[in-house]
Image (cartoon, rainbow, N blue to C red; front, top):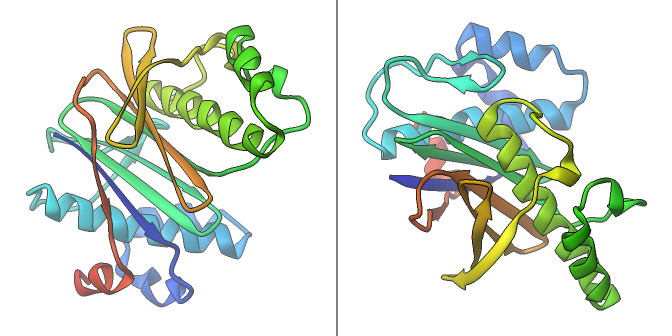
Length: 211
């Protein structure tokens, strides 16, 4: 199983703060930025929905190592958020995911490998940000798979091998990576599973119905 859930950040996310476990509330309160807090609250509600949809019936109590761990569940989870959207990936194998609003940095050579940068340079100006963010989300997913930065960004190479079901599919070392776009966002998933992930866009109404 490899499923990805995506939803928009709740404008009224603070209303649902008290529904969360105390340890999650403490993590959220460490942030001073209101948008960051809204993203984290929405991500927790999305995680609950994803776990229910995956058949999990236990208590949602995470440990961070720093990778989020749901003990004795048999499931691996990964969370990400960017601007107006949050993302959760659930699998029965280790998984890492990332979502980013399409953008570019001043010096992409600090992030891209030589081969990736050559591909980036070939793009038309209006496509460069998209291609940069494609690679960026793939690399971030790889890092989240491992739970830490194990090597420099330039050394993490996403070898795109094919396009299937709107995904750019390929490998980072011995791991499979799938990347796609929606609206003005890029998202990616890294795991040892060859299977193309199932993507579920969840409405605010559906999430609030779980509360």
